[in-house]
Length: 216
Image (tube, rainbow, N blue to C red; front, top):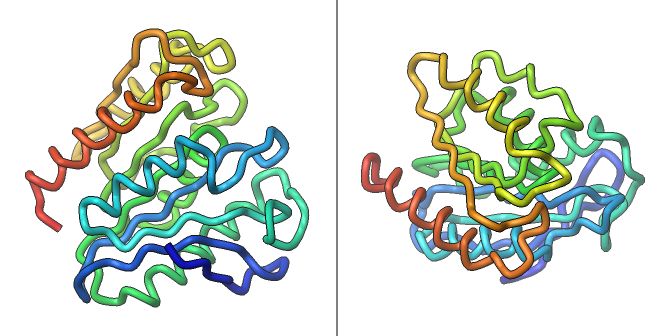
């Protein structure tokens, strides 16, 4: 999993890239949790999602947003972080111009940034949002949501109560043309301690279902 350095608006962006096994491999971008809460690209949830996409033949990139690890710049309250995500997706698409599908997957703050990126990239085919902080950030920008995807949350999440995520899911489910899956893992907290296997199992099963419906 080679290190890559991308040119970003605030300087270099540090990433880890797993190339696909064929020229037209689908692509996936992975976004990590909040930088001010210790979030980085090697977070267990982000790393697990990276591996799940790689196992299914995706060319996959995860990266440190500005001010994290070797990435330059400072935390920018989501504005600069969205720019970094766009830069990372641009790089991924430029290196895989024949990609058959485009996916975005994020955990916590990364889910918030990923969903914003989704709105700006209508070519996106699917998304994974784990523990989206829908009680902290306004998700009303998802109108309409351009792609089907999975929301995964824990029943024991005290940082973001499941009811707050359900409100977003229910709103999105009124839209035509997309399908929103919402899964709750019993006993999982916001940080998924001792439940990483559930992330692997549930996200993996969702990807398999979607790829069976529409092979990449």
